[in-house]
Length: 430
Image (tube, rainbow, N blue to C red; front, side, top):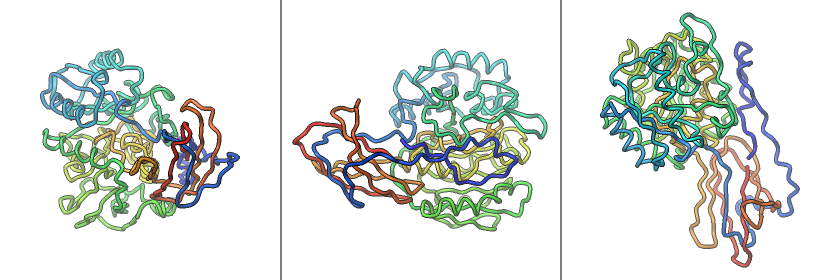
């Protein structure tokens, strides 16, 4: 698969060091067959494979606190809804109801988690709402990196950067020795069930909603707005983006992304979020899920968003400690899951908690077989690129090139036919 990073985004010098960008590699295969812009045909290919673009159920470890009845209920429902393998379900037991764990208590818990986690697991779904914090870190970052004070700050200062930021890695545990985590959080089971159902319903739906990037009058919390114009330019033709000078939006029925800066976001009840929507507000304490003096990030999920993010301790307004909207949107468009897109968009995530349905993938590629000898590929692309076809006797190769065709930004629908006169394996790459 082509290494796709958000290379065109232009960042300030203050944090450009944290962004290890890689330019997309050109497809330069010597191809023997030109593929039509609308469709192509190949000889006798009963098997077709697509490149990996995001995490799946087999990659996720599900953390359940057996001492918390709600956690058990959420864990059982999520395992069934997503088909999480039984061996990936990690049962723990610790006192429930606390918003924060002491570092020592967490280290003992983390030792159990590490011991029980299968080696193939790449990320964690956390089936509880409390605790959301470990001393000065969020619990999602503590699970990812282990507890390390370098990832948090008691005063306004930089923190240790995440190796996963803007990374092309599809296997973070294998490549980076970390497992990103996201909390299946809510005030009761009905809310978390609705969240999970939205995430599942979002998969491969290619929603056509709008991205709302709000530049608010709140100067301290509006620091991301400097990049909004560039984000709109970079993702032109991928998403419909509205950059607005406003405190909030209201009465919108097509919210796919909503990024703003404010301690409270009014009129959420008037909005309709698309399944799979990402939304957050840059403020000091949004990640204090159950006891914040500001708006909790859970309000986004209650309003209909599928994932969000917020700070669990005062981070100061370093833009690196919050999601870069353009990066999150880019990886989401490239077929990544919600947990991957959100995590890759935060350079310094140690003090921030990720909440939502981790496996939502609204823009994942989808291969349909409407007829025995016909295929339809639905492929969403954040870049103008190329689709290449390769053939081999088996899925293990070696592969020989067949041809290529251009991909436009946004949704591509590609039809192709096969013949049963020859056995083989077709691999599609982009």
